[in-house]
Image (cartoon, rainbow, N blue to C red):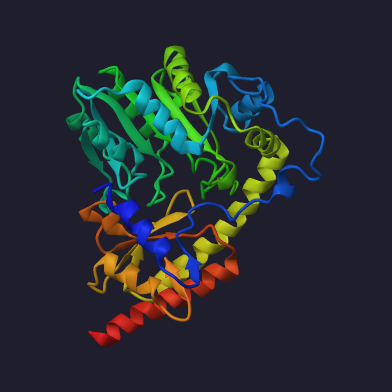
Length: 376
């Protein structure tokens, strides 16, 4: 199951031609000038000398992410959120362990576990429950051999959120078995109702691990600046050791740019710019769904991502492949079947791109549906 996503992305990005990027589930890209302005040409290219992170960065992470812990419980990493996930898995898991993974969600943990020979118990998110996890189902899935629960909220691809009550209940169940909770919070800060941040697991549970980056919220994918936060010092030390053995230290430009982007007023401005565009695009997506009964969706609570259902009967892989080949310009989408078989007849639509591009892409998408109907 988890192998379908990389297979799709390989096909998608090797397809020639111009494309509308509805695969984009992060903010439109930030610019170097957003972070640095005029760069100091005399700055050293040596590493920062701060193995556990620049103190200014740590302070800004705690403040902007509203973590209820000391800065020393945060570890900046070179490689984005994916590095935080990788380090946590490598530090915690052994072949005789088991893991519970949400699905649909970011597929990395499932892929790592399959390659390590670790049993994955899939915790399915369902449209009937607005793509939120069923806590009662978790109670049935968990047992003493489950070492780790992986969650991803705001969720990719559905945009579902957890409430504080959801997070507290989830952590309570995990604590009964001493199970760790790895929470992929890369979209945290992109909530569409109000200004409150969705819950961070590290604020609820001693064995919770929050991982994130500036990739989706600020549109800084290329700097690969990420972090993990946990109250468990021994786990943090193990993650540091693996990171040190893997990459030695953080990229100095990544650190400097990350520090600037995390300055609270700048971070807040860039976050708002992205959310304003996201709100406008989400309105356009709702309009498309309301225009034609072929479409339906559960409105996302957060993230630049929505799982949209269509009622043409065309398999999602075929539909998305056909949209790739559309002329004069195709559309990047992600088939629902890439996540699991229950997600067939859905497509992931990313809405982090600029408004004019997004609205034009939706028209092409509607045209593609009309073409298929005309051939049936």
